[in-house]
Image (cartoon, rainbow, N blue to C red; front, side):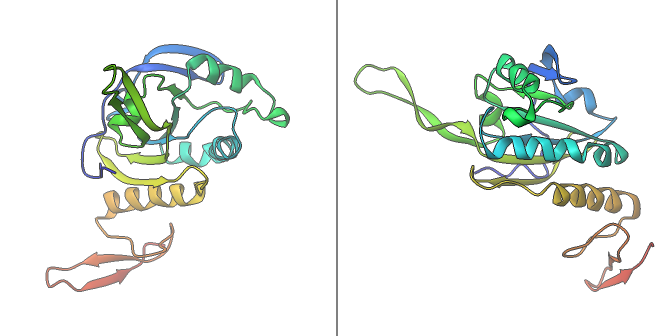
Length: 211
């Protein structure tokens, strides 16, 4: 599994569903460079079990991300038409109606490959030379926090049965923005409003408070 932290996020253009109902082509994260932070997360598939709980949980906290000038974007290997149908399906029927942030289609699986979260790989059948996929042709639950310059600053990858904690994602956004504003590092379990640390030249860190 590749580590993208400290590197520019892979570039892509793909179809996506935005605003919960509108299909667009050539959607790209590059539109947010210089303007917004981005939380870009992958999930295995539409119309499954854990996945809707995650997408709805991000929607429930969308206002918190917006307060932090952060754009949430989801992605799976399903088509834009599958995304659209899922977005029109009532939550009581297993749908995610009400989700408004963009959902990208990675039908070719190249985005998942480039972010190194695809749960498998392509190989060749020695008997006939055909390309075959080895593993599960879906993405792990990868999540990438991308700063306004397009650099990945945090990533986490869960196996498919393990849902993520949205509050932890918000905490990481807070930590990144606090560091950028104050130049101070955030210790374990740090939360917004708590003491941070100032790294000194002799290697000793002092606790500081900006409450």
